[in-house]
Length: 336
Image (tube, rainbow, N blue to C red):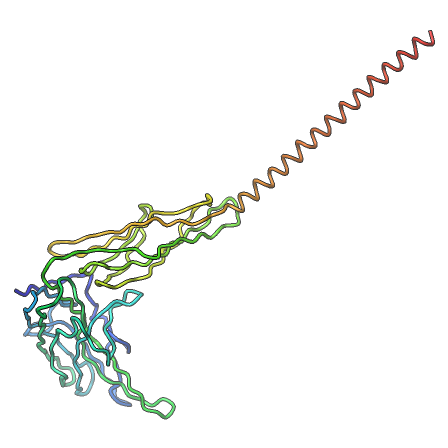
């Protein structure tokens, strides 16, 4: 049975007019001199609801009907092309969908909706669409986006160009079965930047690549030696992301490093969590401190050498005075 839930961490802020692929948020020129603006949000049969994204939990072979609402915010009637495509996260954590012309092979191919819809100015049209899970679908989370688009045309250097601007929202389908959240950390490395002021610490920066090796979409966060690093966005199954952690003040102790821990969580009726840990280290030669120590050693050596030379001169002077005294005594005895 279909069970649709809302998770804030995966929602797309369509109220702000998020564009899934390119273009300005919710706006595009349908033709030279003609402007079209629109919004696309999840809905029920009566109209837009309070969801920002759709999440459906279905069994293999099961189907469910959902709805989207297209609102024409422009001043003229417009026709919008409707579509669905596999979704993914970019390196900066932004959700998007496969571009036009690229065939969907996962959740985007499981969504069936009309090719287009015509909406009068200022009006909203609710369109039902079907999500059908293949019998052979693997358990876990599968992401797609549904959208309405307008092809922009215009002249550039005398040529006509076209750009498809999409406005839509995310659809996350969870196929029933064994859920296995898992993360792996790859290419973890540390870099040390020395501070040439010997009385100030240098900076240790950490980079790593994390891969979602499980079958559940995960919200990522990390920490270094127990110190909270930051939220790193969501990661779908099979996706990887390169992360750089802000440098931390570190004294050069020849070899320095931190324990890196990456956490992944999947909120829901039964929250899931996992983590991965590794040790990163690098050389941190304390050259400024060694130079200070070497300079101090030279000064101390010079002072000790000077004191020894002064002592030797003093001893020679005393011995000379004694010798002169003995000589004068011997001369006095001879004269008597």
